Structures are given as structure tokens and as C-alpha cells.
Length: 593
Image 1: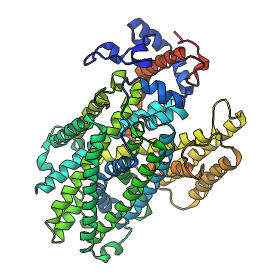
Image 2 (image 1 turned 90 degrees about the vertical axis):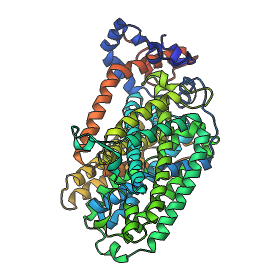
Image 3 (image 1 turned 30 degrees about the vertical axis):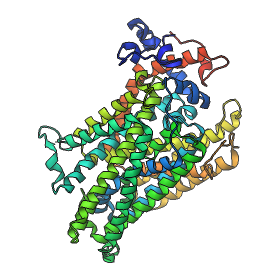
């Protein structure tokens, strides 16, 4: 098979590697005639890939081997915990807190952080079980490939990449804002105004691009060195946060918090929660480092859960402090903490805050760069993206090609796009992926191919469909702002009944080997419900952008990704010593030409 060089055995090394074979080594792209035959077989191939599920062993061995060199196993739970703190605490708390408190929720922003934190913690549990059982660089992409199949994994993969590009771009632009504050300038003083562009894309940000370039260099040199750098900055960052809380409370006025605690009502709380979920994004990047962790069974649960618990507590404390210092209507949306200290006669403190924010956002960018490159590496290992991106540098043990490619895309987005546009679109992609991971966990626990009976499989499918339908119905009622409690009196009990039916009627087919999510199916089902509910609080324009991106992904998949991954899977199956490597291959023993 033509896939051999890039997809099954080793990965060839020939300098910079910029030939066609480095990007499209598959048989379907060997000639225009072969590509035409592949396109004519799109329907059959799509049907095959819709049912194709990878195996744990495939992801851990055959797929990982396509990178050539191995990533170095240098990380401990201590590294992961600080990566988690460094990944999460950044632009979200320092920028979006002020924006949402002033415009959407008021002092009740602390409740919004609690809601988002609960949702994030539920997702952390789901991610942790997968990361322990399948410790590879692919993160949620690998988990979905194993449990929900190739096609659904690709749709999620595209949104994962979008999530990281947008997240990095948003943080880089926020970095510019706080840098300007540190120098007593307005953020737009450091941006170039291109009047000919649309308003949301007209403030060009060269500083954001420069910061991303520096982060790219750091992340390709060494994962362990990146961890040490992140650790030092994160410790300093937590110290700055402690200062903000203590110093801010000396200027507290309880009336600011209690006078009008929830001015926009419950709807404002959940609308803000959907946007503030952006502040918790980053922990999933830590799961991509499982391949570089010394003891995944111990290190990943301690690192991930510990980091999220600490982060949630700090977020709530910071939100309360800000709202005690300043009436919500006077909070500055661009640099809320710095301006709050300046307005309360502590002008010197704003420099400490701005410096701490810069450190926090730097670590977010660093961990994001490390995580997004590992996602792309594993996606490229399956040939859904060009296999050139899967290569791991034998000297540094890092995916250099994937890191540079992702940060180049991030830099382009950061150069043009306003933070407001980025945060809403990012929340959609992330909530969608976290919902899919929770569904995948239910499938993993309750379905094993060849062992689960047809009746149990059908009951499982019916229960999951009911959980999703009731969650979507609840979110839709909320999003359409239908008054009264009657719709929820139907949809919420329906969710409870669906989850209870799964718990009572379907036996678990698989127990976790090393570490498992507690309270299955209730915890992952709750994760599905809250993620879908928060999706219902996001504005319609963001959903339009999300739909356009997903449509573009499907076009790429049907014309490129489908045929490349199909050829790679068939080559791997043909080379297997015994049996099939992936479920779903029984339908077609040879590629339909």
C-alpha cells in the first residue's frame, strides 16, 4: 500500500520533508485517476468510517508509532497540576470577569463561576478516566475514535483545533491589553486600526503575534523545560492572585455586592456561565500530556482534579473581591482589576495586577501551545491531517511541525479578531466537545463490541438518545425564553428518567482498569445536561459561525480526510498479524474502487 511510509511502519526522515509523499502518501492520492476512483467510492467509504471504531491498543501502539520518535516520559503529577493551573488561570478571570459582571450578570458573576466550575469539574472526571486508560497525545480525539468512531472523532477534532487556535488568539490579544495597562496606555494604542475591515476584525495586533512566536520557540525545545518554566510562572501567578484578594478586600464595600446582587436575573447568570466557561478551558490540554507522564494512573487524576479544584476556588474568590471593590456598573471591561485598584487609591497595585495577569496569560499560551500540538500530532497519525504533522523530533522529543503549524494559525487569528467574537465561539466548540466526551464515557462503560447483547446495546442507545433529547429540550426552552416552569417540569424529569433507566436496565460491560469516574451513569449524564444547557445560553451569531466552520470541516473530510484515513485503516488492517485492528472493517475487505 502507498500508505506504508507515513501511516503504518516508520516515518521517513528526509530533511525538511516537503514532498507530496510527506503530505499525501495514501493510495487514493497517488494519481488523479486514483483520486477520481476514491471520490466515486465516497458513499461506501463514508458508511465504513461511520461504523469504524479504533481499539485502545491501536491508539497506544500502532497509531503512536507513526510519529517515528517517542515523546519523552518526563512529567509527574506535580508537573500536571501546575500545567493545569497554568493552562486555566489567565485571560478568562482577568478580562471576562469584568466584561460579564458589568454587562450580563452583575455581582452574581460568582454564581456563574460556580456553575461553569461544576460543569468543568464533571468534564475533568470524564477526561481523567480516558487519559488514564488511553494515555496518548490525542486527548479527546483519541477517546472519541475508540468509542464513537472515526467520523465523530473527526468532527470533534476540527472543533478541538478551532478551540485551541481561538483560545490562544484570545489570550494573546488579552496579553496586549494588560501590557498596555502596565505601560499606562489604552490597549488600542498598541494596535493598528484598519478602517477598511469590519469592526470586529479591524484592530490589528502585532504584539499578540510576537508573543505567540516566542511561545512557539519555548514549546518546541523541551516539554520538561516548558514544565519548569510554567511552574515558576504559575507559583508567582498564584502569589499575585493572593495579593489581589487580600489587598482588594481591604477596599471592600459590602453594599456593592448586596445592593443589586442579580440585576439580570437567572438568565444573566447562565448566559454569563456559558461565556465564562472560557475561563476554565485548558485542562483538556493537560490530558494530551498523558503520553509524556511517568505514571498516568496516579499522576493524571491527582494533577487534573487538584488543579481544577484550586482554580475554581481562586476564581470565585477573585470574582467576589472585584464586586466588593467596585459597583458592577463601574467595572472596567478591559482591565477590571487594574482599574479597580487605581480607582480605590491604590494606583501602584494596578502594576502588580497587570504584571500578574501577563504571567498568567503567558502560561496559558504555553500550555495551550503544548496541548494543541499534541492534538494535531495524533490527528495526523490517523492521516485525517497530513502525516508530516505527526512527526516527533528525535532530538527534542517534541512535535515541532505540529507546534509551528498550529501557532501560525493562532497568530493569524490573533492579529485580526476581537476578543468578544473569540470567547463566544470558543465556548461553543468546547462545550460541544466536552458533551461528546461524556457520551463516549457512557458508551465505554456500557458497550463492548462482541460482548454486549443486542438488547442491551439497543437499550443503551435509547437511553443516551433520551438523555440528549431531554437536555436539548431544556436548553431550547431556556434559549427561546419561554416563560413559566411547565416546560422544565417535563424536560428535567425526562432527563432523570432516562438516566435512571440506564442505571437500572443496562448492565455495565466494562470496569475501569486503573481509575474510574464515580457515580456512573449519573455524573457523565449530568455533564451532558449542563454542557448542553450552557450551549443554549450562547448567542445565535456564534452558532452561525460554528455551523459555517463545521460545514467547512465536512467538505474537507469528504474530499480529503475520509480517503486518507480510509486507506490508512485498510493498510493497517492488511498488515495486522491476526484479526482486524478496527471495528467496522468487516463490511469491506478491500477498498471499494
